[in-house]
Every structure is written in C-alpha cells, then in structure tokens.
Image (tube, rainbow, N blue to C red):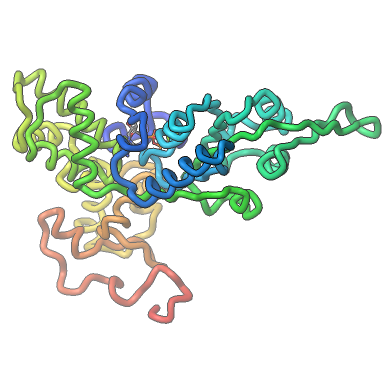
Length: 356
Ligand SMILES: Nc1ncnc2c1ncn2[C@@H]1O[C@H](COP(=O)(O)OP(=O)(O)OP(=O)(O)O)[C@@H](O)[C@H]1O
Ligand SMILES: [Mg+2]
C-alpha cells in the first residue's frame, strides 16, 4: 500500500485504500498463479522459479516485485506462499524501524516460510544491513547489551523466501537489490487484461455485465486492476439503485460519468489541471505552483497525484519552462489545439538531451 495524505482527492481513481476496500480486495484476490491475469512474463518466470524449488525441495530464491500501486504485488506474494504450500508472514518497511524488530521476525521464521516485506524501500538502514546477511547466509548477529559490554550472538536461521515489494525500485540500495534471485517488474495492464480481471470479479460479486460493459469499465481503469475492481463496484451501486439488472456499455458509461470518471479514466482533478492549462494558459508553459493554485490543490498533490497519469497518457508534458498541454489534451477536452503548441516540440524534459 502506498501512503497518501488524508482526504485524498482520489477516492475513485486513486490507488490508496480505505479499510472497507481492503477487505473486499482480499476477497477478489486470485489465489493461484493460473488465476492471476496478465503479466505473462513475470508469471512464466516466477512459475519456473517455484517449480524448480519444489523439485529441489528447498525454499525458493528471494523475489523482488516492483511496480506502481495496485498492480498485484501483494497478491503475487500470497500466491507464492500458496504455491509453495508455505506459511506467509507479512510485514512492511515502515514497521521495521530497528534492527531488533527484524531480528524478532527472522528468528521466529519456520523452514520454507515466505516473508513478505511490503514497501521494502522504507526500511531503516540498520535493519537493511541485518537483512543482507539473513538473505545470503541465513544467519543474523544479534547484539546483546550496550556500549563496551555489548556482544554479538550469531543465530542460524532456517532457509526462508523473502518476497520484497516496492513501488520505487530505484530507491533500493544496490546491495539489497543484488541479493534477490529474481526481480519481477509489473507493468500496467492492457484493456483486454483488465476486462478479464473485471469478468472474474463480476462473477464473484454476482454482477451481470455485457461484453461492451466490461470494455467500457476497463477503458476507464488506468491500466490498474485495483481501480478496475473499484469502478466495477461503483457501477454495481449505480445499477442497483437504478434497478438495471444488466450493465451494458450505456449503463457503465452513465454510471462512471456520475462519478466523474471520464472516458480515459481521468477524474475531476486531472481534468481541472488540463482545463486550467488549456483555457487559462493557452496550453502553457506554466509553473507547477501557479497551476496548483488555479485548481485549488497543493503543488505536491498536483505533482504526485495528477501528473504521473497525465504524463503517461501523453496529455501533459513537463518542460524546463513549465507544464504544457499536448495536442491530445486539447482534443480530449473537445477543444481545437492551437496551430503551434508552445514549447512542445523544442523542449525536452531532459536538460542533457541534445535535442533541447
Ligand atoms: N493479475 C491480477 N488478476 C486479478 N486481480 C488482480 C491482479 N492484480 C491485482 N488484482 C486485484 O487488484 C487488487 C490490488 O492488488 P494488490 O493489492 O496485489 O496490489 P499491490 O501491487 O500490492 O498494490 P500496492 O502497491 O498499493 O500495495 C487486488 O485486490 C486484486 O484482486
Ligand atoms: Mg500491496
């Protein structure tokens, strides 16, 4: 889970979760590798790793899963434990602030157990160093006492499998990254894959949706299964209240429009940013703080919450002189792009790019 500020403006298309949603998510989680939709490469590689370790009768190699929130890292870690028939221990980087916290967990592991550390990039330095040794040699040194009288007691650990998850692989120190035998990078899902996720969830939640209905919801789900499942539940609410037994394309579209999730999955904030850029600043460039004031949000919210998806969708570009709206942004808002988009062709994001 990624931490987001309270009162997240992203209730519909955000990746942060309420407690109620966590329970629902748990119910929708695929339990076996074969039920896990998409991510064909990671799935195939992981399957080999698990089968091999089963044949050899040893704990599987340590696995690092990286990728944006809501793509299935936690789900995969549970699948790894289930496929290995091993117990699963779940903790997270922020929960391990002292080496002692980690020592307590490690020393209670049983043979073959899967230890899942979510947000592993947020672990403290001393704990990280303890983890290096545990991962490589299945051993830790426990420090007893303080100051000059402190002694270290070596402790053997049973072979276990560490599964680390991170949304920011780049923040992991090299020595930690290198100690994972396998790294799986999760990618955003295609519309077709999201439809499969939705079909499966709709079956479990007993919601009747047509093929076109699934396509409509999938196209607004930002490549993210968590968002797809959430939109599906909102569509269900809408259909229930409007007494519509079968959700077709039209119903799905009406429902999601009600929640202000548009055809590309943009929500109110995303659209406000684009509208400010196009109508008030004629496409930019405009500085982040000015843009933030105009949409009535903190700069940080605009930068970390709205911009990544707009950039990914090719609707907004960051240039050294500020944010600009692309041609696609104008068209998405139903506006005609100006003949020349200011700065769009000349300035690249990377100041070292010879093109800029
Ligand atoms: N490949 C998939 N097939 C079906 N459902 C999936 C898949 N991936 C994710 N989901 C669904 O999406 C939800 C979110 O997945 P998960 O919690 O594993 O994401 P995550 O990568 O751990 O996110 P975070 O970084 O926020 O912890 C789960 O409830 C699960 O049902
Ligand atoms: Mg998770």
